[in-house]
Image 1 (cartoon, rainbow over the protein chains, first blue to last red):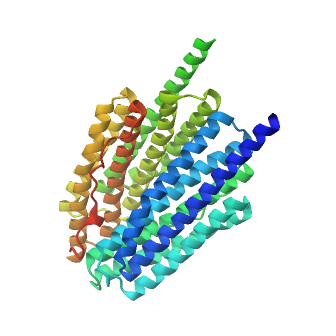
Image 2: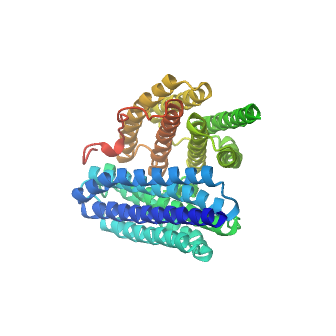
Image 3: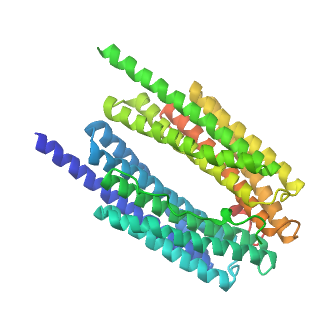
Length: 235
Length: 235
C-alpha cells in the first residue's frame, strides 16, 4: 500500500513536470514570435502571440491548481515538497514571461514597421537570442535536475543586464538626436526592458532548481546591474 | 477534538491575515516614500526604501511558507482553501509592489533632483495618490472580506490606466522638445509605468478577494487600456 502511494506521487510529479516543460516551450515560442514580429513589422504574427496568451495562462493556472492539490492530498516532505513548490514558482515565472512576450507583441503592433534603426535592431536581436538561450537552459536544468547548469544560468544573467544597459543608453541617445520617432523609441525602451526581465525570470527559475535540488539558495549576491544604477545626470 | 482543530485553523488563519495586512501597510509605505523621494530629490529617503526592501521580502516569504504549511497540515476545503490560496497570491502581489517601489527609489537616486518639469510632477503625484488609495482599499476589502469594495477597486483601475496613458504621451513629448535631460525623462517613463503596475497589483488583490469570498472571478473583461494601445505612429 505504501509503495502504491509512493508510486502514485511519482506519477503525479512526472505529469506536473511534463506540464511545466510544455509551459516553458510555449513561453519561449511566445518570446521568439514577439521579437520576430517586432523586427519584421509582422502584425499577423503579433496577433498570433496575443491569441496564444490565454492558452499559456490556462496551463499555468492548471499547474498551480494541480500542485496545490498534491500538497493538500499527499502532504509531501523535504525534496518532494520542494519539488512541488518549485513547480508552482517556475510556473508563475513562465506565466510572467508570457505576459512580457504579449506586451512586446502589443508594442510591436503600436510601432511603425520601419521604426527601429539598424544599429538598435541588431543588438536587440542578440540580446533576445541570449535571453532565449537562458530560458531554455533554465528549463533543461529543471528537467534534468542539473544544479550546475542552473548555476550557469544564474551567473550569466549579468551579460543580459550589461547588454540592456548599453541598449538603454543608445535608445535614449537616439531620442535626443531625433533619429527616429520619439514614440516608437519610447516603446522600444520598454521592449528591451521586457527582454531584460525575461532574463530575470530565467534566473529565478534557475534559483528554484538550485533550491529544489539542494534545499539551499545559491550562495553570494547575484551580480546585478541595470540602467537605473547609471551615474546621475548621465546622458 | 474536532472543535479544537477547527478553532486552531481559525487562529492560524487570523495570524496569516494579520501578516498580510502588515505586509500591505509596509508596501504602501514603500510606495509613498519612493514617490516622495523622487519629488523632493531626497536621496536619504530613497536609501531608506532600499533598506526596508529586504524586510518586506522576508515577510512575504514567511506568509507563503506559513500558508503552504497550513495547506499540507490542515487540508482545508472550499472557502478555507480559497482563503489560504488568496493569502499566497495577495502576498506575492504585495511583494511585487515592494519591488516596484524599490525600483522607483533606485531611479530617484539616478535622476537629478530638479529633473522633473512641474507639468509632469503634479499629474504623477496625483496618479501615485490614487494608486495608493486603490492599494489601501484592496487591503481593507481583504480585511473585511467585502466583495463590493473589492469590485470598486477592480473597476477604478481604468482611471489609473488613463492617467498613465496621458502621462506617457506628455513625457515623450517633453523628450522630443528637449525640455529636460533625456535620461531623466527616460527614467520617469519607467517610474510612471511602475506606478501603473502597482495599480494592476491592487486590482489583482481585489480579484483575489472576490474569488475568496464568492468562489468565482469577477464577471466581464476588466476595462484595460495602456499606452501600448495608442494608435500607430502617434507622436
